[in-house]
Length: 234
Image (tube, rainbow, N blue to C red; front, side, top):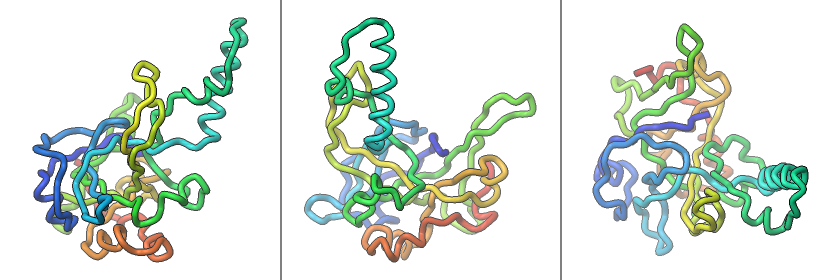
């Protein structure tokens, strides 16, 4: 699961590659992006204009996941002898979000696979969890092989606008724009580090345009890994 990526490119480079018309992000400093951080995405605005905007990384989790989490929390409170208003507890159950989307046949994700909910997530490098010789965790970073590709590319993303939920208990109910990106089976060299999945990456202008405009029956074929060797370890 990719839960850390790097975004170095400036707004103009992102606008040019995505064919977006406007930017609402101001000046962007190079940054590492972690879950629930605000990050740039390219989306179709409410007026139909393609735009560069900010959203928080992590789409809404499924109702079942939130129900299970709230049930566990309620059981712990009852074990301590406390009264539980379960509907209120469920309403306020924190949802830090789902960063990676694999099962696009799920009823939870299908409503957000339409073109109006698709987005492009710009990145220059991403990491997967690895281990050093002593077995300690260390992120392994990947970028496109720049003898074949430009450094900037896009994850195939989905987003939702004005979603109201509790992201963190201390901040309570919030309304914000959220995004995540699709994953697929990995190719090398990612597979040797993380054999379960890698992000879906769009590198070609026609792929980018299709992802933003075409019906799902066409673009679902884009949920596939890059060829072996398209990425290199930094």
